[in-house]
Image 1: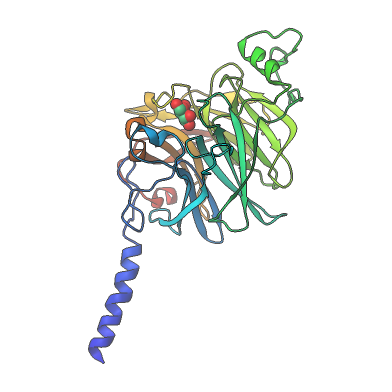
Image 2: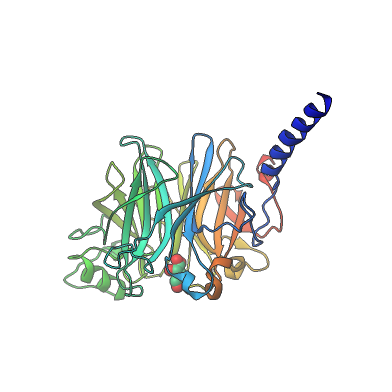
Length: 366
Ligand code: GAL
């Protein structure tokens, strides 16, 4: 009996220990999941639901082929953010080459949100149709009744066809465009795309305190970011959107809100190669957004420590706790891409991001 008890204790303790093995974030290193395999969720986003964090991202395969979607969107779950359980493929690419999400297409930066009205999980992503390079520039959407999936592909399109931008109060007159006379390249692209909808590449989805969802995406050949209102069920666009930092080529938008201020961190446009990050604030989600330069400081700041933003995670239950999440891409062997999770430091309402080799959530208690 004594031995049996000891054995039981060992098993229980061992299981608990196995699940708690990571106690820190070590940005840029291999990050094994519960099976010991490097997490495969690139360009990812997180969702907190029922006490659990879910991480969705691009499942990449080895080599250069991994830059295209050969498998789909991978999902992981975690209670502590350090240790992740493999929940499998949430959205699978289609074997039918005529399908919008055909195997070999480009399916990037998936973000999942929960819609309380429809009780559905809604996944948005940047989609490029098979064999067309980055020409299609579409937004794609899939839904599921279960957070981990399987998600069913709904549609893909270019948002806000036929609509002109919304100009929030305080917009600089110079920002107002007239498609009879576009003033520059980006306005020209905007006007060109009005009939068929705006291009939608690097993207994120942000849910505001009132439950309204916004889709933020690089439009106009990546010259401008659009902040677009989504329909109540989160599966479409309403036609109301503003243009942010027009003409300045911002990619990889990640949005969060603190003390009533909207923050956005993005990158420049240099493909897989890192460049300096940039941050913005606004009092209304539509803007006007103020540009503040690079939030990163210290060694490697000029290349965002080798990464490109993908998400900012507010840590549930902690005040002023926001994690900057970036991808360190490895396009020659896509599967080897690394994740840079770094704490955001606030100085008043200003932010800073510094490199840390190893850290944990205790930094937010200070
Ligand atoms: C990056 C973008 C990635 C991917 C890549 C392709 O700038 O953020 O999501 O599209 O370009 O070169």
